Length: 84
Image 1: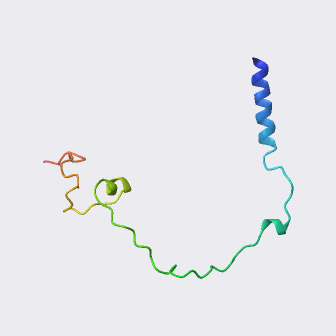
Image 2: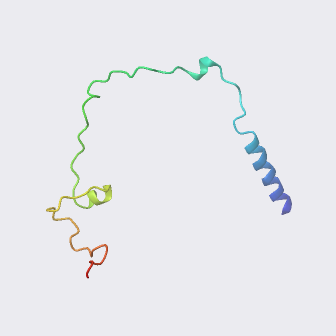
Image 3: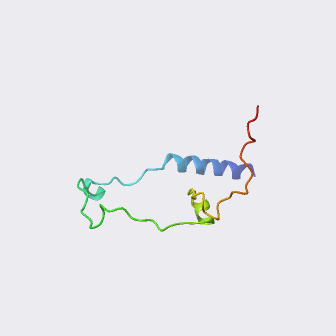
Protein backbone atom coordinates (compact mmCIF):
# COMPACT_ATOMS: atom_id res chain seq x y z
CA UNK A 1 0.00 0.00 0.00
CA UNK A 2 3.00 2.26 0.28
CA UNK A 3 3.26 2.46 -3.49
CA UNK A 4 -0.30 3.88 -3.64
CA UNK A 5 0.68 6.75 -1.33
CA UNK A 6 3.86 7.35 -3.32
CA UNK A 7 1.90 7.40 -6.58
CA UNK A 8 -0.68 9.76 -5.11
CA UNK A 9 2.05 12.10 -3.82
CA UNK A 10 3.82 12.21 -7.20
CA UNK A 11 0.52 12.80 -8.99
CA UNK A 12 -0.26 15.68 -6.65
CA UNK A 13 3.20 17.21 -7.01
CA UNK A 14 3.17 16.97 -10.81
CA UNK A 15 -0.35 18.38 -10.90
CA UNK A 16 0.59 21.36 -8.74
CA UNK A 17 3.78 21.99 -10.69
CA UNK A 18 1.97 22.15 -14.03
CA UNK A 19 -0.94 24.39 -12.96
CA UNK A 20 -1.16 27.28 -15.37
CA UNK A 21 0.81 25.56 -18.08
CA UNK A 22 -0.96 25.75 -21.35
CA UNK A 23 -0.96 27.45 -24.70
CA UNK A 24 0.00 31.11 -24.68
CA UNK A 25 -2.86 33.47 -25.59
CA UNK A 26 -2.48 36.27 -28.08
CA UNK A 27 -3.65 39.85 -27.41
CA UNK A 28 -6.60 39.24 -29.72
CA UNK A 29 -7.75 36.20 -27.74
CA UNK A 30 -7.59 38.11 -24.45
CA UNK A 31 -10.36 40.48 -25.56
CA UNK A 32 -10.81 44.20 -25.01
CA UNK A 33 -11.30 46.44 -22.01
CA UNK A 34 -14.27 48.80 -21.90
CA UNK A 35 -13.38 52.13 -20.33
CA UNK A 36 -16.80 53.74 -20.73
CA UNK A 37 -19.83 52.53 -18.80
CA UNK A 38 -22.75 51.89 -21.16
CA UNK A 39 -25.87 54.01 -20.67
CA UNK A 40 -28.72 51.82 -19.43
CA UNK A 41 -32.18 53.34 -18.98
CA UNK A 42 -33.17 53.51 -15.30
CA UNK A 43 -29.67 52.74 -13.99
CA UNK A 44 -29.54 56.09 -12.19
CA UNK A 45 -32.68 55.32 -10.13
CA UNK A 46 -32.44 53.11 -7.02
CA UNK A 47 -34.28 49.81 -6.90
CA UNK A 48 -36.90 49.71 -4.16
CA UNK A 49 -36.72 46.51 -2.15
CA UNK A 50 -40.00 44.93 -1.09
CA UNK A 51 -40.90 45.31 2.59
CA UNK A 52 -39.92 42.41 4.85
CA UNK A 53 -41.58 41.62 8.16
CA UNK A 54 -41.56 39.04 10.92
CA UNK A 55 -39.28 36.02 10.74
CA UNK A 56 -38.14 36.98 7.25
CA UNK A 57 -36.70 40.20 8.69
CA UNK A 58 -34.84 38.25 11.36
CA UNK A 59 -33.39 35.92 8.73
CA UNK A 60 -32.38 38.87 6.55
CA UNK A 61 -30.71 40.63 9.49
CA UNK A 62 -33.05 43.61 9.32
CA UNK A 63 -34.02 45.59 12.38
CA UNK A 64 -37.74 45.56 13.12
CA UNK A 65 -39.52 48.68 14.37
CA UNK A 66 -40.33 48.51 18.12
CA UNK A 67 -44.11 48.53 17.57
CA UNK A 68 -44.00 45.42 15.37
CA UNK A 69 -45.93 42.56 16.96
CA UNK A 70 -43.39 40.00 15.79
CA UNK A 71 -40.46 41.61 17.63
CA UNK A 72 -38.88 39.41 20.25
CA UNK A 73 -39.78 41.36 23.38
CA UNK A 74 -40.10 38.15 25.43
CA UNK A 75 -36.44 37.23 24.90
CA UNK A 76 -34.26 37.52 28.01
CA UNK A 77 -31.83 40.45 28.09
CA UNK A 78 -28.40 39.81 26.60
CA UNK A 79 -26.64 40.86 29.82
CA UNK A 80 -27.83 41.20 33.43
CA UNK A 81 -28.84 44.66 34.58
CA UNK A 82 -26.09 46.70 36.25
CA UNK A 83 -26.85 47.45 39.90
CA UNK A 84 -24.90 49.27 42.58
